[in-house]
Image (cartoon, rainbow, N blue to C red; front, side, top):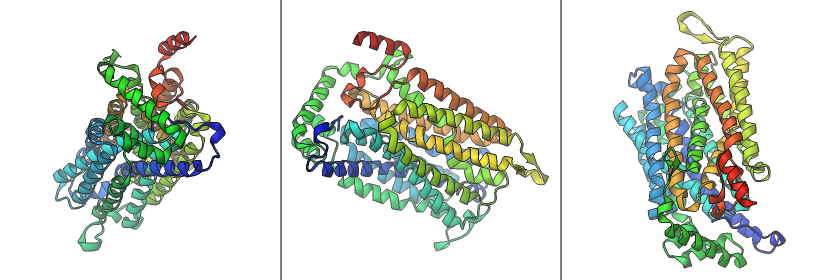
Length: 493
């Protein structure tokens, strides 16, 4: 819902608690796309080594087979906004669920690396769609006063999906980080195949829920279905506010129609509007700090440096990631976006620097085995998990909150699609580059991620405004960048 705010003197009025529960339930259901996102992102973690051996892959091809799904994600994210505007948010969710279902079955039964990569691209299309439509849906059905908290459910669902993927990988592999994924299980299928086939369950659940969700009121009004929009608003909005909310959404839709030429993403800054660039850079920096190296390659990485309980370590890291996301949900609408992002960037910089320093003390034994002597192994492990804590409590959820709310109404779906596509491309670059960079030097690799964490701090400090409590209809008045904010402040005087 486009920024409805509850009146303070009616917060305890009869029926409002029921409305709050309904809004929360809708946000949770909408965020389940994030579960598929997280599951797909990490399910390959436990399978990557076994896939390499099964298909006799060179390291570069093995890395590409992991990363190629992200290209599908980028395309799906780019197209999702246009599809969602045409057929609706909930039907677009259903499309994502079907694509992921097909991918899970195909990847689990793949005959070779070529068709495996094809199925992964198809799954990526579905995940890209879900990564855009879920935050868009949540932003349009929840009030501005709780939008940050409920918008963070997207990231919580992602972290739960990551945990579910890593836990199922560990259970199927028997927590054996060296050869467990290669063992044969039910129907004479290897464990790594079952890791993908398990994805059938969440994809079906997401599709069923998408069929039951009400459509976004904004989309219904854009399609001239006022009765349908009012029916949805009655589930989420106090009765006395419905007429105002309908009028507000209608006025923004009419304004968008009148200014159709201005609904372009094009602008004066390298061909795009400043707010679009802000979304792109936030998305890219979220990935360039290297978070998905932890969730894609952690089992391989911890095996390589001498930790034998690599699956258990990966599961513990995923649990930490889930836990700290609750912190973000609890405080985002109280503290605000900017302070949390700044604190997260500072913490990530320190944690990643500690990991880089720890790897500088690694030693190579006979047969090329790499080990971290005490206390550097512990420092690397603590630093990696501290990094997950800082990311999971700030940049993980808050970038999705910002992407769902920072763009003006007239370009939100398109701009969110572009920003999410940029995020997937950045994810692809990090995922593909990690194996050769790690072979070159883990110190350099984590030093590079440290540098991007520092850049993220500077970017937020100088260029990103606060969006806490701002109605979606008012987002067009936000200014990104010091000169733009100064001009906006002077104009407001």
